[in-house]
Structures are given as C-alpha cells and as structure tokens.
Length: 231
Image (cartoon, rainbow, N blue to C red; front, side, top):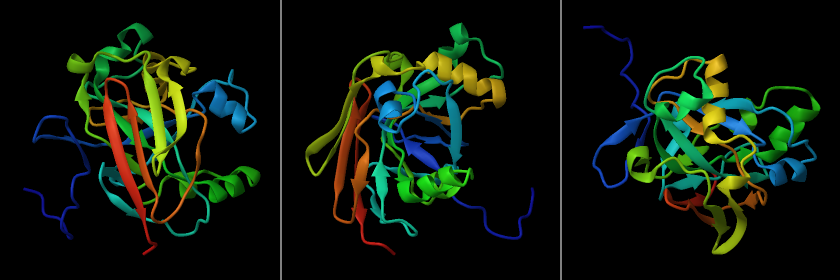
C-alpha cells in the first residue's frame, strides 16, 4: 500500500442517468469552433481544422449546482455542448472505429472568462486562465451510448432565465463525433474516463449572479446551473 504525504483528493465524477453509479473523470478535452455559425460570429473560418484545449478533471460539477461567479472576469460566457464520454482506450483511432470508444453522452456547459480569452488571443498566449478555472465544466448525467445511440442530429439549446439564446442542431457540427474522437486520439492516447466537449453553436453570451441556465440535447438529457455571488 502506498502512503501519501497528504490525503488523496476526491475523484472527479459525473452522474449516470437512472443509476446510483458515477462516471470517474480522467481528463477533459474541449473542441474549439466546431459549429460554422459560432466560428463566423467570432470572425473565424469554419473550414479550419479542429483544435483542442483542456480543462482540469475537477472543473466538472453536476447539473443543479450553484456556481460562484468566478474571479478575474467581468464577462463570463456560457457555451452549451454535447459531451462524449470515452469508455475504451485508443491511440490513432480510425474514424470508422471511433464510436466504439464512446461509452456515453451528456450535456455540458463550457464556461469561458471571455475578457481573459480576448486578452490571451491578442497576446498570443494560452487560453488556460480563460477556460480551465474552478467549476468551469458542469455536466449533466451521462446516458450510455447503447441506450441513446450515437447522435448525429437533434436540437441542442440553452436558455438564460427562460429565454433561449443558443438553438441549433447537432447536424451542424463541422466535425462529427467520430472525427473528433479520431483526431483527438492522434495527439493523445485516449483512456476510459476522458470527456470530450464537442463544441458550441452560435448565441453564446454573458451571464451574471442570479442567472439560471437550462439547456439540453435531444435524446441525451438536460442541464441546469445557477450563477451565484462571487466568493
């Protein structure tokens, strides 16, 4: 038995739909600009190949969480996303085998400190401080792919205080799930427990203390998160 100088931290995890079991999270990969309209609203070319950034595993929190408004920002943005949960290890996975590695799917929100991201872009610096902060990756309960199938179309949406802001279809993904899993595996050895946030559609915007976000993906599930006062 290995002894550690400090107590082991809690294992980050996501709820599983209709189960008391949880899905242990190893890493979180996120895809940037994977819906054409969202790419265009930020002045980018949707034909660009996909790129990835990461969040720490413990950035994940459950649906229903009240999240304190994070520090260092005055422009916190919501980004609703379909999340793919990896259940089978793989490296350089062929596209036609990629879905075999997906255990299930959920609905996530990629919170972004947009002002910090804008500063990082101008200075050609990494995005970590704008993306990889505490509680920046809420995720609803996962549904197993054997129950949901592998979604290729269906509504993805997010509302703030009941008013819909993001409303699109998974068919609008520039790079579908099989491509994303395959491309990610060319750079990283995917392992069970990895989550991939697959990109957000147009309509992202700012939220503040007291705002409640609800969102969902047809056939997968929903999520609800409230922004609280800063710590």
